[in-house]
Length: 274
Image (tube, rainbow, N blue to C red; front, side, top):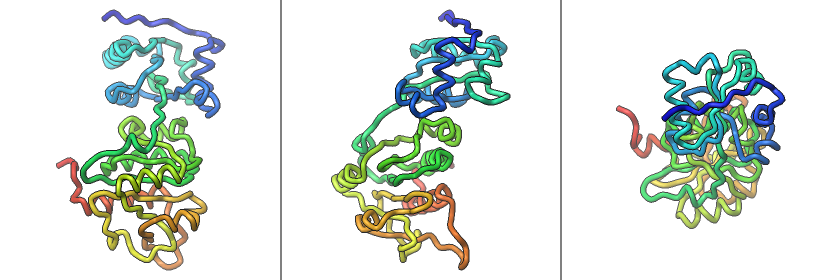
């Protein structure tokens, strides 16, 4: 297929202005788009069948075989192909040395029911988390630990923010996630028959003392406040990660990784690479 690429050189072009503005949540909500930077992330999005809207390529990269192959794949998926000077890529990404390509993808809006699956599985609930770097790192951990999916509960930071997508290192495309109120989340997990295991300073059992069973949900709280009392009361079990006396606290992403890997260990690491 012959590549059909249009050239844009002005920062005042409407497309360039829209792409630059995707670092703001308001624009992401209005357009239902988000940015993925770099050939590896764009290829992951395409391979996972996410809807690509526009592929932007640096003019200096057009003769590179991997860029042309990616452009052909994007065009076959219905993307608009655009080439721009390097300076415009820098303006869109707000980075001095951007990659050769970036793309805008359509967001996906899912309810917890979309995450339902049969057989052994561990899910993760994140209650009102605020840091997009934490969220991106947790998406990456969930992908590596083979979790069935993540539910973002109540008002959380935006998984489609530039910071979260970058921190996810492509896991944004590989990890199923949904959004819900706590009431909807709790109703869903009861319907699925899933025990709810909350990480809390009020917990008395260590992660390795908890029976995660074949199917369960791990619930992690806000970075500063943790889980409020009424949410802890809805949990079947509260778990406390041990720390040395006098230590303050673990980073949320680190604590989530510890809980997730313990659950996966108890399952025997199904799906792990050999």
